[in-house]
Length: 446
Ligand code: ADP
Image 1 (tube, rainbow, N blue to C red):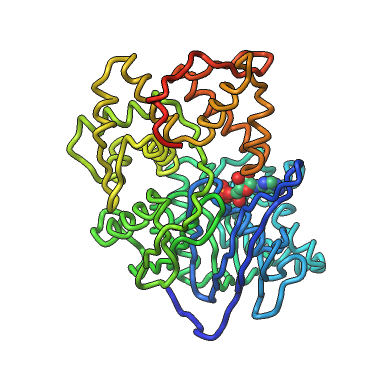
Image 2 (spheres, helix red, strand yellow):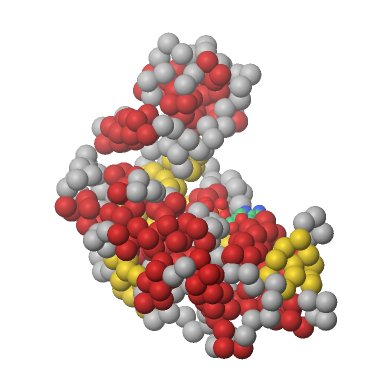
């Protein structure tokens, strides 16, 4: 149902950026120059890998977080403070355990200053609509996960928000419950039994986005930015096996798994810009070399080259396979083109090598391609005792990542470097030390 009132903008984002100041004074950019509009009548999915700023963007629209730059407009008027037209459904349900279902649902109405009588009436009506009839006086702990999330929906919908925001609302539920609840929500929306004008759903599930959304906005990471804005015009209820469904899933998969393609808005035609000149500081996905080896071996064994289907066969979500693919790509072990993944010659050499060959190959790939490993190696070489404290590396990383992310990056860099026997790590002192001198031939480029 895309009954768009062409002129009406529910939400407009103009050049919205969000950055946070690090303890060391550096600015970390989370969202960069986001421009988009949400219209009445549409379900919009915000899709992207974890850390691409989906939640931050949704909270900015809800007025929970002020942008650092740019503007959020609500009905073409700049938003100040909380967005009065928005209610949120959280992944974690966020219910008060000491309140009954009815009291939980009444909360939002109470906060809006609704008098007790009409508050109760509206809450009871929504409890009925959302299928919680008979559970009014139950406490959250007495309910299953699916029923608890129904309370989350009822609470958000009871205030009759113009925009219903949902932050991964189905990810804490089992597969079947999630699918039922998705379709029930769709029923309510398509039959106009809920008073909501538009829905914004944050998700990392491509199929979930294609099942529900009229429009998919793909966010990229580091910093978060809009990479594509795709319409989904298939009629509801969509069949996951239909070739048109699969084609959209493939298209989105291709965009997400090719972070270097700068895909931008225009809805009907996805254009591709040249990559930016300044290379971004690499972000190392938190995977072990063993997982990379596993993926490469699988690819060698099977004919299937379509990455989405490889993931399906392995029953992996995009969020689970993407970090492994990204890591393999950083080491130049795989190539991706139009959603197909294939081994590079060095990838073949890696899987066909002995354990020592593999270590040698990873060593040379890391020293040639991975910035933080190069930097650690140079620092170690420069030191007479060939040891450095991990804090030194964290300080470098915190110029590019949040403190928490810097820790993850350090852990991965240590993991990979240890595998390749470039350096070791000593606990509990947190010292990194050089394993052995690396021959100059290993360092071709830097
Ligand atoms: P997503 O929802 O796509 O997983 P988030 O919006 O939760 O992404 O976070 C994007 C990035 O912003 C993450 O790297 C996260 O660590 C960082 N981030 C979020 N909130 C803050 C904050 N208050 N201070 C510093 N960094 C933050």
